[in-house]
Length: 365
Ligand code: DNO
Image 1 (spheres, protein in one colour):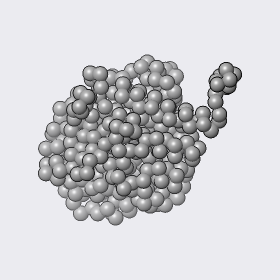
Image 2: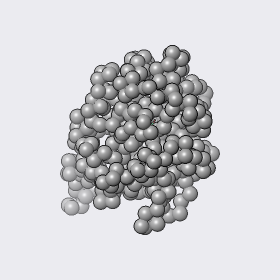
Image 3: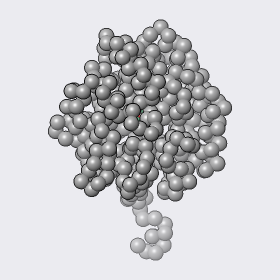
């Protein structure tokens, strides 16, 4: 597995590339042009600037997350063709810069959804939290007000220009069913997958987070079965998934290790994180350690190992610990701890497979 780390760019992140460099085994930066709204073409010049900065610090930029999809594409409006053309040109520009994977999502209106970004745990750390009943009782406008408007940084998926048009967007989605969304996704993929394939890029859709409809908006990428359907929409290696254990793990019925084994060839990118799921469907993000949450992190890493996974992996969100002031879910400390946990599992599996390391062998251990 190739370890990568999400970074929001110079002046847009509390974490520095110098700090990331000191986390063992991180070889690449997961990045995006966060200043560009969904629907804009990403200029080659801007892409090359990020490439230079990252490469100067010894990182590759092979994974991009997120090239956001304009809502007109998700809604299937006549204007979608214009945005699809721009998306193709962005793919081409990213290909020229050496990008290999593009992580995106097809969630209407919102990207991920939480009700509290700083829920305090017994140990004093805070983390992202989802309260199911609250989502049913609050209207989306209030939630946006509570979540997005009190933050120092813009959060991806919660960009002001998107939230500005919330009323219009909800109206537009009123009659859009899950089947409509599937057909709009198919239309999009049929257009862009040939471009991605030509550019040597794998498209990797992110699962819906949480994996069920919210505020009456349909969701598709919620289960193993639906991932199968997505992969069949355009049956090509460039049409893949970002397997996010935290998103899919919110539904305990989701067998994530089974998905890894079933779809190994089509997972170019893995997000690994843990959450603790409660019976009432609430969940809180925890440390990556298996004992702290409900997700079988060891089983997941083992499944990747068994299938010979050679794609990219990033620790996903982390808690906010040791008084760190950072973007919600994207601090340095807990994500670095997460990486070390993942390496611990991976290295012990490797050792088992290959026998003791040459160094230990030479010492007769
Ligand atoms: C949350 C992320 C998502 C992801 C997008 C990809 O922190 O995992 O926002 O980046 O869904 O488009």
